[in-house]
Image (cartoon, rainbow, N blue to C red; front, top):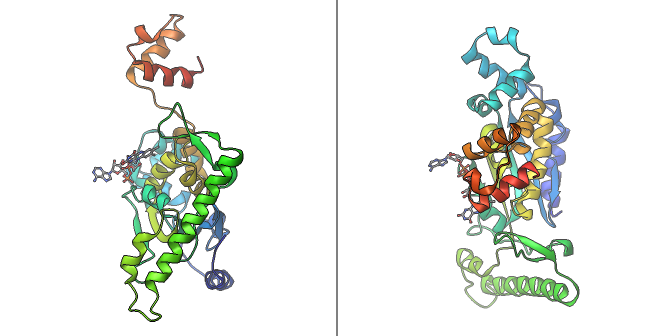
Length: 302
Ligand SMILES: Cc1cc2nc3c(=O)[nH]c(=O)nc-3n(C[C@H](O)[C@H](O)[C@H](O)COP(=O)(O)OP(=O)(O)OC[C@H]3O[C@@H](n4cnc5c(N)ncnc54)[C@H](O)[C@@H]3O)c2cc1C
């Protein structure tokens, strides 16, 4: 992981200077605070700050439901109820601020999640480092033949070696030209904001990313999913592990009702009910398209 010595000493200094607070803290998250978790070959994700815990979600929900709820359900039960019924605002009472180092092509997917606050490293102001994401050999896969948006079998032998060599040499050549264009040695030197356009999308960038727990769960639901590209999924999985320690009850509800759950259409639900009654249901009699039926059959393990 390419955390710089300066960043590491900042982390060490921050962790060596605890401060007393009256605010609620989550013991599970305190152990993650400031530490960088390595992701991909040069990336990382680390918690810079957080607000709230499971109790903050419950506390906010009780404003709307009143004290009666307290008797009826315990905290974990109430959180499950909120998740099950899409009562999302209590989850917005918790916030997470992350420092993420990630390849630019991953950042382009990540930034589509508009409900976060972002501040990115400025390549107009600063010079980018010579750090490129080069996939591990087991991630170097061919185009999938069944999914236009996915990967198939892993490349092997000479083809794999050639691809790796092209990725490395193209990245280095672009960076050499970037440095040559920036150089003020015997020339004016091109502006940083222009020279960067020559760099490939596997160069690393960094940002601070702050989001509330409701929108974070939405992000994780989409990006920790098997359909998400591996390179963003590994970041989402690293964040999942942190969130599980931060708000264990909320994360358990999220896992059950979102991550491991599935959504059925009206036709899908009708087909399940008919099957439970002992009827034989086919794609034609279900009213579903061939694609929907394929997904439904996979889900139901028919
Ligand atoms: C597997 C996968 C494949 C994808 N493929 C593509 C692709 O091929 N091309 C492509 O362009 N994108 C693609 N995306 C991105 C996708 O379409 C979404 O843009 C992205 O996942 C962000 O989702 P979101 O808008 O729900 O999230 P957020 O921006 O975080 O928004 C969260 C929710 O807030 C609400 N919201 C936010 N902003 C608005 C708004 N302006 N108006 C109305 N409601 C709003 C919506 O309810 C939204 O669901 C893909 C995503 C995934 C996970």
